[in-house]
Image (tube, rainbow over all chains, first blue to last red; front, top):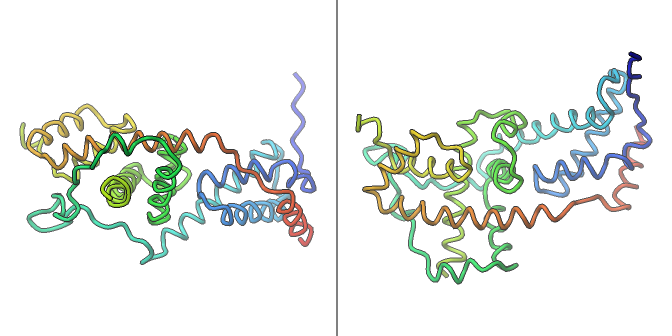
Length: 189
Length: 85
């Protein structure tokens, strides 16, 4: 059986052939258009620089995606180390005899006219988007990947280099924060 | 036996969140239900969390419809940047 010829690179066609695919791939993970553009650009730069290492075993697109994935992990690590910005508020006591119990002011409250307020409309979607945007970035990324984009837990852990228990802590904190945000800004106003 | 079932509100709501993605184990679900017998706050959380899942699904369906692309101008700018290398 004849061997498949190795794949080759055509950097002059990268933008036309892959820019949209890579941009869409990135924006579903970082949800920021400017950051996504930068990451795609960095991917092309890195691709050009390491073109001589391309062995043709995978397609050009697969190879570029593998570079992009590393760029996304780097970005995720960078924002993960940014301290102080939009920290998630604690919902449960984290020490003392009440450890693990609800903090009084964060206890869930009944929602007013709940069924009336869940009618799908743009305003509701915008409020939800605002609440997600108010999460710390690393929480927002994991939350979006898992809940909005529907990625498998294993895939997210692999891509972002985090453990499954880490992922569930993040999802839990993000969801409790989002519940509170929607309670304060939508259900009980 | 019952000691193993005892969990905090923080753990109970974490299990509730996991179960929204069908990823809670059977034992975790038993722990959660045991906790809910005596905890009205977490029971309310569970009820509201299902509604939140509904909202997230709506949002998710909304996002799936949109495919994002770079504009022609952005692509041209990107090409120019690459040519500099």
